[in-house]
Structures are given as C-alpha cells and as structure tokens.
Image (cartoon, rainbow, N blue to C red; front, side, top):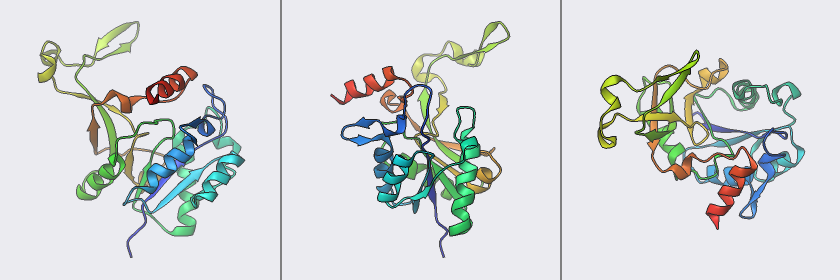
Length: 226
C-alpha cells in the first residue's frame, strides 16, 4: 500500500502583525480557505492537516474535511514557539491514526500568490532523487547580497561573482518553504524542517515572494488583485 503524503498547515489564532491573520478575507475567502483549496488541487497530496488553536479555523477545516488538530497546545501557539515544534506535534498526531509517512509537505497561508503546482514539483523532485532529504520552493535572484558580521557588512557573493553582468552571475536562492516544502518525515519527527541534502524548485517572479505579515503587506496584495 502506498504511504500517504500529508501537507501541514499551521494556523494559530494570534499573531503580532495582523490580528487573526489566518482568518482575514481576500477575494471572498479567508487565507486558510485559499490554502486548503490550493492543496485540494494537488494530485500528490493525500491529506491536509490543519493545526490550530482557533475554533473558527477548526470549523472551516472540518467543513472542508481536513485532518483537524484542535486545540493545538498553548505552548505551541505562542509567538516564541517555533514552526518546527508545531510541525512535529501535528505529524505525531496524524501518524498515530494513519501510520508512518515517508514524506511530509508544508505550505503557509500568508504567501498568497503561489506558483501553480510548485508544491507538486517539490514532491516529484524528492521522490525522483532518492539521495536528497528535502526540496523547497526558492526565489532565484542574481543580485549582490550582504550579511552583517560584528559591526560591519560582509559580502555573501564570492569575489569572482561580484562584477559579472547580472545575466552571468550564479544565482542566489532564497528559501521559501511557505510556498512549498517536501521533506522526509524523519526530519519533522526530529524537530527539523529541512535535511542536509537539499534541492529546490526555483521561481523568479517577485509576485510569488510576497508574504502577508503586516497591514501594509495586506494592502499591497489587495491592490494587486484590483
């Protein structure tokens, strides 16, 4: 029997930037509904797991016949609780009822514009490449990037890459697991999201990089939709 591939949606009630963010309405549906409907179009996802401490989100999830975890423990629903501990908790509960999985997937509700089938492409890449641990969506960019070390900035780009024309630069990839992550379930059980041997499914359209964390982000999304 083929082992199921679930997708976990973490949708807690409170958030710093926008109150009840996962329930805000865009184009006639809440963010959680948009994400569930997106996942239902996948041909590779067997179950949608919704982990929440929000009664209203739980009702939406159950109505849409998702595997609903409610209430999520308070200690896993705070601002300081990591996504990894909530993912581990959700998978443990799911596997108690449905048996062990080999692959677990993940998206976030707040990354509203999702490339069509990018999550399926992540799953296919993981299945095809037996030696890799994880595959995620990644924003492909050809810019010069810096990071802060001590009191100063330090280049991420190597010396040979700095002065190349944009078209010739080796790209830098921004991890976007909120758009799509397929990972071997053993890492979720270990409290990790991503393994050591990794591939990505790149995208370059900046529209897909937008993430709703503030009211300014929300205004921008609604303006684009108009």
